[in-house]
Amino acid sequence: MSGSSSFAARTYRDDAVVLRTHKLGEADRIITLLTREHGQVRAVAKGVRRTSSKFGGRLEPFMVADLQLISGRTLDIISQAVSKGSYGQQIAAHYDRYTVATAMAETAERLTDSDQESAGAQYRLLIGAFSALARGEHAAELILDSYLLRALSTAGWAPSFTDCARCGNPGPHSAFSAALGGAVCHDCRPPGSPSPAAQTMVLLAALLTGDWPVADASDPANRREAAGLVASYVQWHLERVVRSFRLVERL
Image (tube, rainbow, N blue to C red; front, side, top):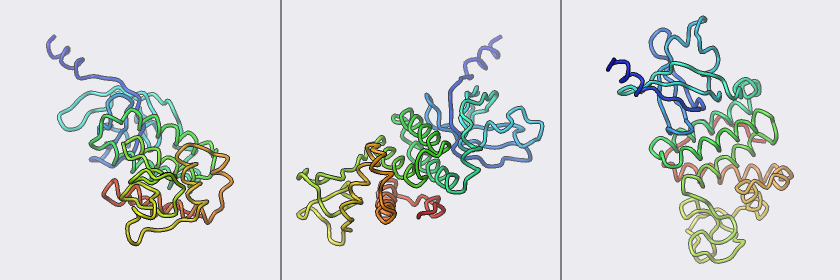
C-alpha cells in the first residue's frame, strides 16, 4: 500500500510543449519539455520510436500535449500523452516555418533552463508564437523576431527602441547597443555602436508591442537590419550563440 501511495505522490499532470528530442537506447527518447506549471522538464518517453508506440506523433517537436508524468531522480517518465495543439505538421511542411520554430524552441530552452519564475509566461508566449506560425498569419521571420523580443522582455530584459535605454533621455535616437538595452542617445552611445535606419527602429518597436500592421508593411531591408539587431540582443543576454539562427532564411 505504501508503494502505491508513493507512486501516486510522484505522478503529476501538466500541459507541455515539446522543445527538443533525442534518442535513448533502441526505442526510447529523452524529451525536453516546457510545461505550463512545472517549468522546463526533461523526461523519458519509453518505446516512443516503435511503430506500435501508444504516443504516436504526440511527442514530436512543437507539439502541445496534456501529459501525465512520474517524477524521477534525474529524468521524469511520460506515462500518458493527449494531443492539445498539433502545430508540428503545419510547421514542418514549410522550411521557413520549421527553421523559425527551431530557433524559438532553442531560445525558450535556454531562457527556462534555470529561470523557473517566468516559465509559465514563456510557455504561453511560445504557444502563441507556434500557433501564429502554423497558421501563417505573418512572415515567419517577423513572428520569430517578435517572439524573441517578447521572450527576452518576459525574462526581464525588455529593450527600449525610443527613449535612451541607459539614461532615459526621450527619443527617438539613432544608435543601438545590445549591452545597454537598445536605443541609446549620443552621450551614452558606446564607440562602434551601429546606427540603424529610423524605420528599422520603428519596426523593432512594432515587433515588441505587436503592432502587426506596421510590421507587415515594413521594407525587406529594414527587416534584415532589425533581425541582425535582435539576434545580437538575444545572444548578448543569453551569453551564448543560438545555433538555430544560422538556419533561418531571410529575404
